Length: 255
Image 1 (tube, one colour):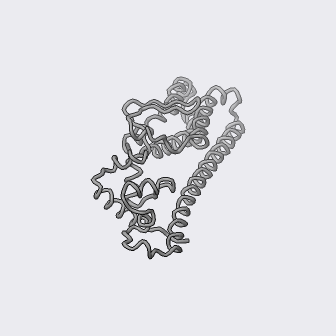
Image 2 (cartoon, rainbow, N blue to C red):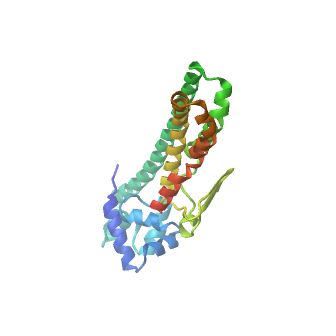
Image 3 (cartoon, rainbow, N blue to C red):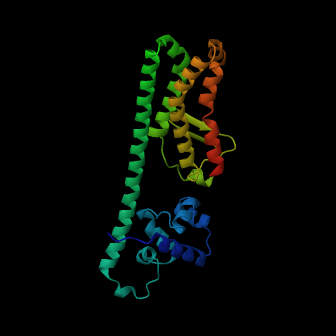
């Protein structure tokens, strides 16, 4: 398959945009995409969706073939049809590759979540074998584990990995998806920090789900009973509400 030179495309796109006296944001607004997307195109990190090639070429005053080849073609009547087909095929291949990569990431997230469930199940069996009762586990672990696994399921299985364009165009600090709500004052959600926010959520919820039973066991073995009894609420709140710390850090860092 013909490989499109992303770097050459990006340099050419930057040149054309500047010749039209457009900023990245202005070009993005005309295409109804985010300026972060235009920035990635120009840095050769990604390619525009096929549906954007014709409006993009029209805005920049070149043909789609010139845009994809990363250079001006002064004698279009002499174009090789096979070369044009290769360029278009290469673009389709890039779009297909990006979809395939998204599917692969989703499979990895599902695998991580299922592995977490398996570890939690094994930990529960081990705790029961060590003499802990069902009632103790329900009172001490159930709420924290269920909350972490519930939010972990959302982050790994159901969350949308791309935000609507209006998030990039406005300062929005809240996100809703079905029954899930996220409102973080001071953090602007956009497609630049959203992947990092999701990663932070996955890492925290799955890590806590796996490590909290271990913490429970160690405290029960190393300290008097009253230590866990008096600090149970504190431990649980820290485990659940602590989720917002890495999310806020990631959101502000990549905003």
